[in-house]
Image (cartoon, rainbow, N blue to C red; front, side, top):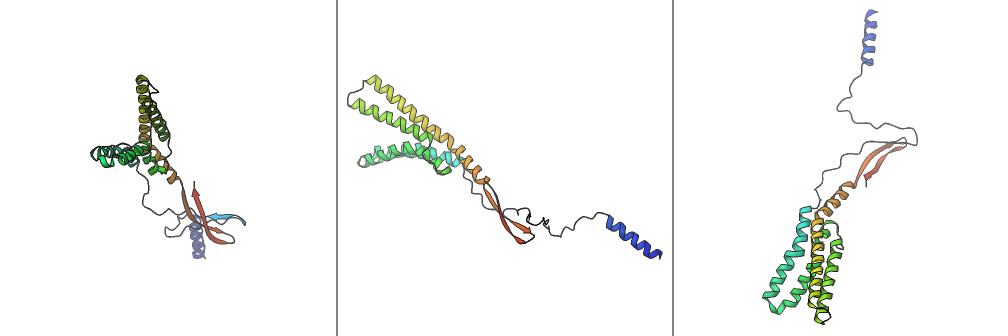
Length: 199
């Protein structure tokens, strides 16, 4: 009789003592009342190759396309007189749109603030040249307008080159903020998957 009493006492003590769950025991969802869904925590996203764009590369692209490449084309145009006009047109075009190429790399945008500033400066220079050739402007006025147009163009170029890296970082931040994951879901009526994400 005493042995039975001792065994019952030991069993009661063991049941009353908290025990840690086995490390090998799988995580179980908590079943909710009918009509509600119990969701397990989303599984970690699989490691994927980092597709972030390089801010330094964006700035380099703007600098190369906006200054280095058109300068090289102008040097070639000076050496090869037979193709001077097409090379000059290509160089002039790159001078206007080239600094925006880093933004195209960053987020596909070429109509940047710097581009608009450069267009304004280029238009001022061309209008001044036309006025000078038709003798509509005196030399002093022409030089002043040429200088204003050149400074305006320069400001637009520097703006795009300087802001290309930050535009790339903003694009990377937006990309990293958007994620979708599949999570297991268990309810009273069955099990399945739900799509969880952040935007």
